[in-house]
Image (tube, rainbow, N blue to C red; front, side):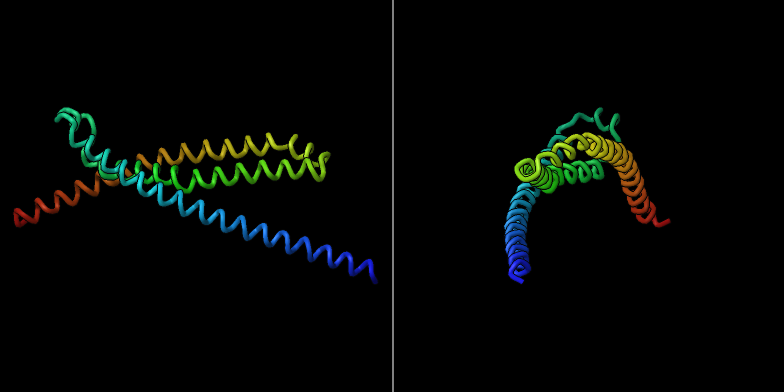
Length: 169
């Protein structure tokens, strides 16, 4: 009976430790995400202002080469991508990197032979993550081009509707 009680106490102690560790990780993750999101929003606003200023300073010939009706969609898409990259993606990347490093260190401390087996298989997981990132980037480029074209068509349509309405037709 004493041995059963010792096991129960050990399990309770481990559960308490893991709960405290989870709470600390949750608070740190929330604080990091909040700070990075604020920074990302501020950077995005600054990039948007700089982008608009740069567009307004272009020569007239630049508008002949670039489709002016797609500019608003491109500005919105580009700044949104920058905002996501600076805020949530950077925060997640740093958090996952540190969690992975601490996990590897703890694995070697507690069970080094199992850690070696997992480390030997990890290139497969890394290749899978790289391929998913590559495919996502390619798909995002196609989606961005499609949204820019759709934004241009919508802008042109609204412009033509105002012209038709103004002429009373």
